[in-house]
Image 1: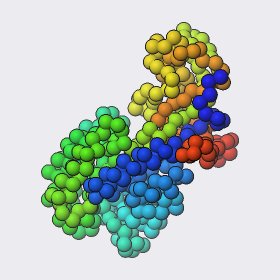
Image 2: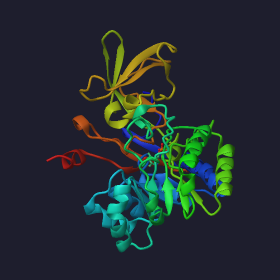
Image 3: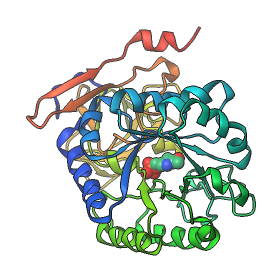
Image 4: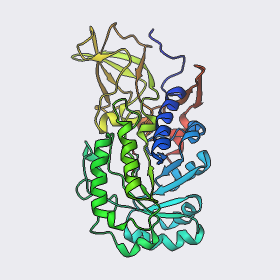
Amino acid sequence: MRKFYEIATPAYICEEQRLESNLKTLDRVQRESGAKILLALKGYAMWSTFETVGQYLHGCTASGLHEAILAREEMGKEVHTYSPAFKECDIEEIARISDHIVFNSPQQLERYFSKAKAVNPAVSVSMRINPEYASSPVDLYNPCGLYSRLGTTAQQFNPSQLSKLDGLNFHALCEQNVDALEGVLDAFESKFGHCFSGLKYVNFGGGHHITRSDYDVERLIEVILDFRERHEGIDVYLEPGEAVGWQTGPLVSTVLDIVHNGMDIAILDVSAEAHMPDTLAMPYRAEVRDAAEAGKKPYTYRLGGNTCLAGDIMGDYSFDAPLKIGDQIVFEDQMHYTFVKNTTFNGVQLPALAIKRKSGIIDVVRRFGYADYQRRLS
Ligand SMILES: *Cc1c(COP(=O)(O)O)cnc(C)c1O
């Protein structure tokens, strides 16, 4: 039987060494550019690694009450909370535990500014603007697409509110390199540059693929330094999610059965729909360890999930040897936008969360069971 890890599957395994290597790259950007980097919890929220993350990054970006509590309790550094729309019943608690609140619209700012300041006079207030510069590769992940609700456009922006604002945020990228940031910055500065006096910071959002091997880190540092020189006294924040978890570990699964219908099909103890949703939503093809495109190696299989959804398919992959029941199938790079989105659809098992320590030991930090399924229903 092909076994890569001594672990009961399914399981996500975060490799501490790789996480630290990403954090070191991000820290280099912080040190050489003077920018502050936050972890966007939306993309990566394995809080048992936050002690490590917190040694490098300045804090977290949360998208509402629950992420804000997690940021406060599990990392305890800066908490920046943005939501497309805050709710009345949450705003006081959010203001209490956040260092920065980011409003999405002039109405939200108007509605909640005094309430937030009353609870936490020290809270910084920012507004997310929409630079209307769209270069994201996929509509689903394009915050500046047609009719986007995310961020206030220059036309809707109300300059009379500037006295309430300490910062401006934008988030316009998705898995992009620094050239895309330069395009957004141009659009941002030409549309909002006249609003900068009095601001303490600008937040360049996420979507910077800083830890990808072909990302131009040098240029990012230059771009930030140039911005800070043009706008003296304004701090820069970045808040990547994916770049923190990028290439830090796999999702490990096991072949449960092999069936034949026009081709060989392996049924695994994971689900594309429930455990690796971007393979269907983006869509993209996950890399499988020791496998190749269909037909490249002698034995080709369709890899399918253990749900009753017909389209729960990870793709077609070829292997050097026939697959056997009990073989492990290792999907690479499954630490971002996976377990943060997991569902118990069809009652399938939620994969365990594990950390591979630098010593090589694998600690399973969380196992899930029936109770997790049952508790979400009534
Ligand atoms: C999703 C998101 C991020 C993180 O984006 P990544 O692509 O994971 O880097 C940062 N800021 C905001 C406002 C977001 O919505």
